Length: 285
Ligand code: SIN
Image 1 (spheres, rainbow, N blue to C red):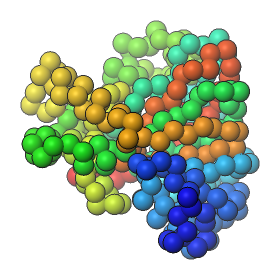
Image 2 (tube, protein in one colour; image 1 turned 180 degrees about the vertical axis):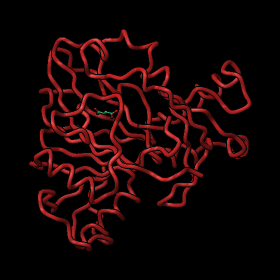
Image 3 (tube, rainbow, N blue to C red; image 1 turned 60 degrees about the vertical axis):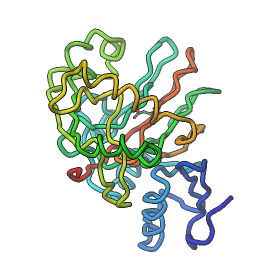
């Protein structure tokens, strides 16, 4: 049901009880008025991921739109769109088996100042499949026991790009076909609180993820892994998630500090082409 009590200028329809809302009544090729932008920001803070349908943006319009939300972070590892270094191509070709982003994760947690958000624009989608799942890390935190919350609130964790984008994976299909590049630049390690206070909502959120978190600070990898595995299974519980079915022209904007996402890899033999712009964040506390 549309959330019409709070929003006058835009249509906001929640996708699940947990997170995610579809926004209607906005043409993203046009400059957004202050009042529309204010409502979009409110919906983004409330639902953590917002979706738009049937948008027809040129690459430059995609960049202009992203710049209305913040400064663009240029990705070091993804192949950029020709002539547009700000836009990373997330592609799976018909003959490829591995997709990009096909495990639960949050983008750029290996950076000292992790990305605020990612804006993904569907250029070409398979006839069926290729949905993206999102999970709320505020709900995941809230559902933990008091004992677990207390333990996690005292911990920091190390996040790394080395095992995900570095030399150890440079013979993967992603590197061989040029979708990813620059393994020599995968030198980022960053320490973040395991539970952050979300900069927009003020709510506490779980901030570890299966792609980039390597261990708790002061713990060995072997000591860390069982608790991390528990948190990864816990965070992916269905009641914390929503699922978005892409169409060409769909756009998702998600908050990397409040969500995980997971791109379904269930469309072998078909092409899926997405354009991603990542937005700079603030230091996490
Ligand atoms: C990503 O992980 O950034 C890509 C998600 C997707 O392609 O659905």
